[in-house]
Image: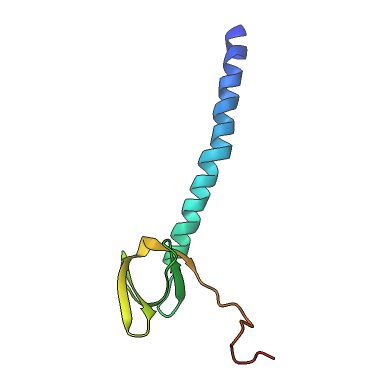
Length: 97
């Protein structure tokens, strides 16, 4: 019984480590995979380096982005960090009052 009581703090530390580190990391990884699988041609995206572009074509592990009119680059699909949602009512957009 005394040996079990001595092991209890170690088990508690391992459980705390699991819930504080491992589990959130797995959740973030699932979110990243889901985001990268949902990318479609025509969407505006941001790469992990901060470069924005519009998706022109997709393959299994690569994407081609247009970063300026007539300028396209080929990137690793995993480098896409987020899908850029346009902000409604940006200054200079048609429809501004």
